Length: 154
Ligand SMILES: O=c1ccn([C@H]2C[C@H](O)[C@@H](COP(=O)(O)OP(=O)(O)OP(=O)(O)O)O2)c(=O)[nH]1
Ligand SMILES: [Mg+2]
Image (cartoon, rainbow, N blue to C red; front, side):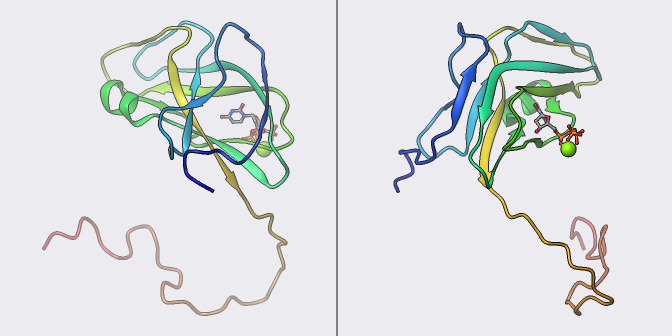
């Protein structure tokens, strides 16, 4: 397998046939860009469920995760409420993106066809949850939520 030759075939229906399929900007990219089919303006702090015009049939054992795009996050404060969104293999509906404007002052104006998010397709494991009375020891134990310290400044 070479990084520029996608090897997984995913069936896609374009619910909006005037917009292109999701695509990778560069060979080796993990995320394929998703487009909005609608114009939408997000006021500061506002969220909106935005349609992408595509429906997928992922192969069994795969999941598609809807991630924010870092450039839009850095430039405009655009993110996704439930990041990463989970597209289950059995889901046949339209992929939608729950966008949110984190900028405290400026609205974000999106136009139909804008690249608003990216879809990362991964294999996953389905776990068999086995109840036990006690868990094995580990170096971390139950330490979390800052147990190793903060920024690491002295
Ligand atoms: O960002 C997202 C997240 C989810 N979905 C679709 C595909 C996914 O398979 C389905 C259910 O998502 P999830 O399991 O995250 O939501 P839920 O609130 O648990 O709904 P459900 O009870 O339908 O599982 O909604 C999207 O289109 N975009
Ligand atoms: Mg669910």
